[in-house]
Length: 159
Length: 307
Image (cartoon, rainbow over all chains, first blue to last red; front, side, top):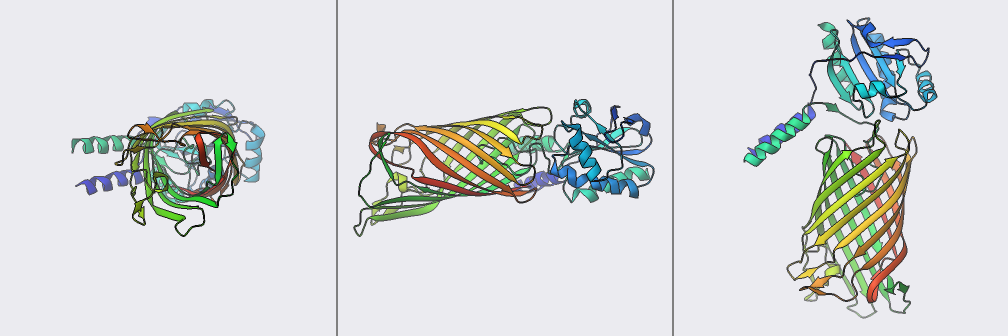
């Protein structure tokens, strides 16, 4: 009986998912690459992958090019919006240019949006459904996350 | 059974809200030595394997080194496995198990050499970390309570004579331990940090009525982590112990004060693992009694894995 409890706890650790549907708070930020205004509500009706990152974060550097690939593969109903939180804007800009990122990158100089979303560690990302609700919250990034996250996005796109 | 249910339910409540993997702000390979590393991310495991070589060939009277001509060698090799687990965002637990190999040689007679090896003591420490260094906080503080458990033998004999307590792999007694940590990051990435770490242990008697003296350690240090692979830590540590006791009577030539400088370097192999190498450089000691052996050199080599 005790062994079953242990297995149950271990399984719950492995498959912990946040399926709470709460509305994603709206925000506006200036794009780090072209200074155009990025407003979350402008993308209402699309599935949004919202990602917080900084240039000093090695896991972020792994994940950012992947989002570019998704943007190309998953069609017009999907959009990546990333939020850079570097203390020095130039650090974020240099990394965006080096990785040739072509999706919107808001610069959150005072961490207002990061605090709004309680993104205290990096990378921190959210999958927002077409209704504008947060469907999934993901902390960190490792190679095996790619498939898992893509499946969730594709499920939302199919709805 | 009810307690088990509460533990399971509490555990599920803590673990069912997020999906986690390697993060940057406070996860990955711990850069500080195991007892200094305060926080472990929720649902994360850190495993550390540490080897320490400790030679105690210096003879001291108070704070003065005594030079004599006696042939003397005293060495301890320790192997420590430590597992840390983040229960939730504020609570984590650490467990350590040691394997110890003691060697001693005094004089040149046929029975001058003695040795003992085996599983030593274990330690379980519950840590509470209400504040962690992350995007929103430059401070981290943590406190913990633990218990040292005598898992190994403490009555090994040689030539039918029980070896002295300092040669036994295990102390044979329980201890309670209080632990604290305060850290400050100078930058968002936490590359430059200052920290203070301390612990106090109260030691019980073993079954031969011997008790190691209560011990207090405090270390202040600075760490610098380079963006890619290398990290450096420099720590100044003060340690003091009361005299050991048997049946409540103080044992002569035990207890004292030590100040050590402990520099170490870490190399991150990848996001999950790293190695570290440190040495302990004695700066000052003031030892109780007429004569005491103490550290001549010590070094540690560690491997860390996070998942």
